[in-house]
Image (cartoon, rainbow, N blue to C red; front, side, top):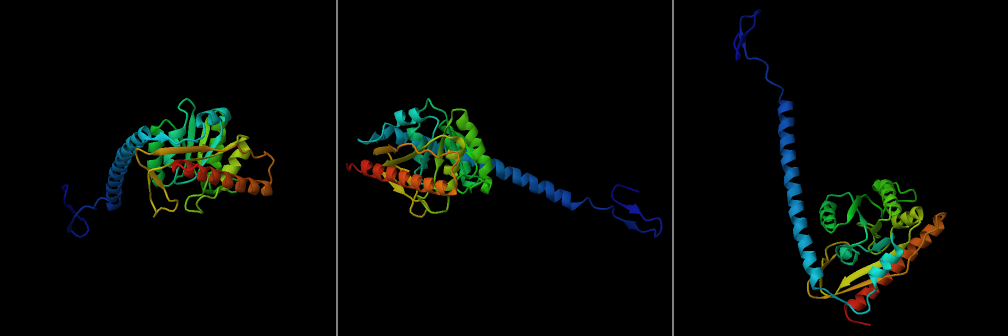
Length: 265
């Protein structure tokens, strides 16, 4: 017998040895391909996040504060730790009015697009929690909502503020979900309805939330409304009433910021 050929004692015929299992080879090849894609994906995300971060820093450095804007530093410091609530589409401006001396964590979804957002946010020194707070139901169980809300409640207890987008991804723009109401109830911390608007911006009209990309050399208006508290024993009816109150308050802050950014008193 040799390495290549062996004889069958019963027939005297020479046969080739059994082939190595092809499934194992395919699996190893697929694994190598997957690892290469993952590495390239992480690298591309990191590079793009660095570009976006540098661009936002440039925009921030060239913005002038719109007259009439809230004293957001005093507002956020006085209520800290609080749940700072914004609409989708304004999330790129959230780091612009975060007091650097106060710790904050941002809730981001689990989808692949959020990887880029998380990379950018963390470059601003803001921690992230992944999950879906917007769609969390009464028990916070949907889309990892329970784990996300528990993690955020713990961070609030550790005197870390929370930045949270109030409306539901791919849902109705500018309508608060129950997740932010639930977080306020279980944490005992207030919701601060907030908005940030720049006078020069490019609106992505194809996006469901009309995402606004801030442009340099404009005015930025920041409006922070009065704190909204949710009782720890709130029932379903109270939770819904608070959800509507938060919706109205964020939109009021948004409309006020729009006027200030345009120079309308």
